[in-house]
Length: 366
Image (cartoon, rainbow, N blue to C red; front, side):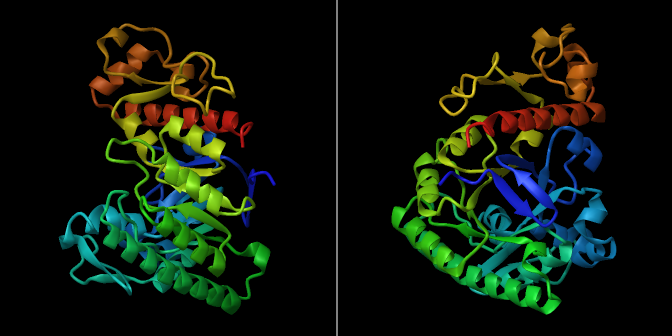
């Protein structure tokens, strides 16, 4: 059976693979919903952990949910907050704590601590009107000690059970038909341990979800993709289920993961790189056979390079994004040097258009 090339959502069908830019607080930074869609982007991922702080769950609801609030009429995925607990709380205890009951943290500008339980995580995402919902998970770094990985897996499984139960309760309470329900994804943890990854995947499969996510920091200490673990997870999850490679956004890594059988990706890296003047380009004309088998088809263009000062060429000849269609590289560099907001807009559009073009090519691989 081939890996899935389609994810059917209540909002419509999503052709795979897809890269989802981070729209953390309800928007892709520097772009309107319409400008983001014009880049060829079909779905975005928003952040439960941050949205509950700004603008707040009651405000999101008052504004009609995430779709109406943000003007984004395509698919919205919402992550659970597990990665934010890892990146903030695990690194600095002053931001909060993790317990078996959930994630305790102090929202910005608030004097009262907030407890994000598995049940609350699901309630929030359902109230937001998300199309794909992720279970709360206990995220770790690939190199964290084994005892921490064990705790993470056991906690992630327990939280997943609670998320599944709460999701089913809410859907039954609302009388929501199966085809109108958002998709619920479980997240597989386990660090670098084959045994723990296997244990977590098998437990989540037994609970039953619509799809699964590769959880945990996906890079090793040398910032290389942990391809053995990524491959292992695809082999553990039956082929009919889509897997979301959470946090993987480096184009060559995406290409490798697509070859393995992954169909969904998200990362803040392409838009963050754009804001810092690191633009994405194809090296020559990429072939379908070359994409998953090396990095030579991809290269960075550093807009601050002095050789671009008087360049009348576009960032990339074959790109039709607004930056390449309307402006020279020399002018783009000028905008960067004077720190004009137009640079950030145009650079972000270019990198997102590159990612959309890459996904279109990779659909011939999956």
